[in-house]
Image 1: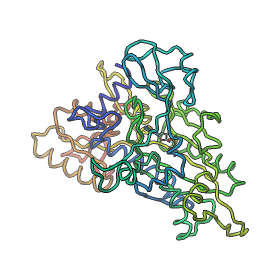
Image 2: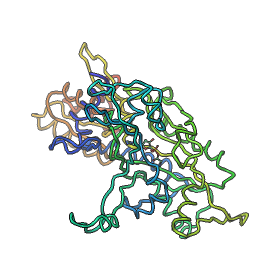
Image 3: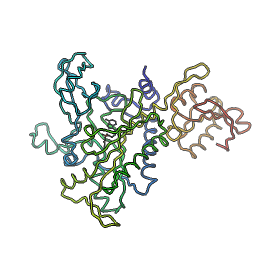
Image 4: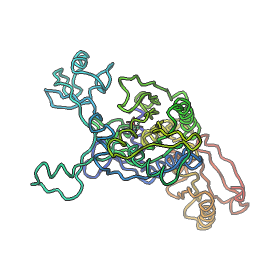
Length: 447
Ligand code: GAP
C-alpha cells in the first residue's frame, strides 16, 4: 500500500474520515468526517480563525450565504471563465482534465498541444481523443419552485450556482461593512465555509473534492501599498503553516504562477505547494486580485465601492490581497506529516504524531484493569478532573493496556494516563508519551 492508502485506511478505521454517502456506494469527490475528523477539522479552523482574525485588530469575520444571486457570478467572471480543459476519449468515452493526465501542459492547453503529448487514455490505453472543451465547474441549482414541464425560460429564471469560492460572499458585503463599522484601511474580511466545484476528476483522497471548505481573507489595501501588504501576508502564511500547523518548512515550496496560468482576477499569484504522499500539490494560494472584483461589483450593481481615506481624504477603490486555503488540503498535509510507522519492542506500530494543539484528544485516562472497581473509581475521578481543566480528554478501558496504547497512538493522543494499584497508595499515576513511549510517574495534583 502507498502512504496515502495507509492514511485513507487509518482515517476510516479510526473514525476520522469516511467516503461521502458510503452506505449507498459513495458519491465521488465528497467526504464525511467522523467524530475524530470533525474535532481535527474544527481545531484546524479554530487555530486559523484565532491567528488571522481574533488576535488582530484589522480583521473582521463574515459568514455569507452559500447560494447567491446569480449576478454575483456574472460580475466575478466565474460564469465566463471558471472552466477546466476537458478531454474525452473517443474509444471508451471516459472524460479527463487534460492537464492532469498529460505532463508538460497547463490549464490553458489547446487541442493541438494536447495531441502533441501523445497521451494514452488512462482507462482503455488508446490514443484517440476528441477536442479540448472548456467545462465550467460551477454546480447549478434552481431556487424556488421549478417543475419538470416548465419551459427553458421559466427554469432559467430560477437558475443559480453553488459558490465555487467563499470570496464572493466577502466582496459582495464589502460595502455593507464599510458603511456599518467604518474600518481603517488596510483591513481584512475573513470567512470560513463550504465551496463547491464540479471537478472533472476528484482524486487523492481529500485533496481534490467536489465539496470542500475554504478559509479565505480579502485584505483591502490602498492601491499603491499592495506590494508591501503582499509580502507581509506571505510571511504570515509561512508562520501559520510552520509554527501553528507545524508543517515542516522543507516540505513547503513557493511557486510563482506565470501570467498565462493565473486565475482571471489575479495580477500576481504565489501557490504554496506541499510535498503530499503522492507528490507536490497546491496547498494554498496567495493572490493579488487588484480592484478587479470591487470594480466589477460596482458595474453590475450600480453602487459605488469607493473608500475615503480617513487621513488624506483621498477617494479610491481598494485593491485586494487574498490568501486562500482549503481546510481538507491543510488537513491532509497535517495528517501526512503526522503519519509515522515505527517499531516498538519488535512490533510494527502506527502512530499519528499530531501536534498537541491539533490532536483530537490531549489525554487518555485508563484504569489498569477494568474489573477492579477501586481502580475504575479512582480513574473516573482523574478523568473528570482533567476534563474540567483541558476539555479534550478521552476515557479508554477497552482491551488490555497494550491495545489501548496502540489505539491512542493511531488517533494521535499525546499522553496516556494510567491509574494502577500504586495510585491507590501514593496518589501517583503513570504518564506515557506517545512519541517516545517513555513512561514517568507523577502526582495527580501535578497533572
Ligand atoms: N478565492 C480564490 C480561490 O478559490 P483557488 O486557487 O481556486 O482560489 C484556493 O482555491 C484554495 O482552495 C486552493 O489552494 C485549495 O487549498 C482549495 N481548493 C480549491 N479547489 C479545491 C478542491 N476541489 N478540493 C479541495 N480544496 C480545494
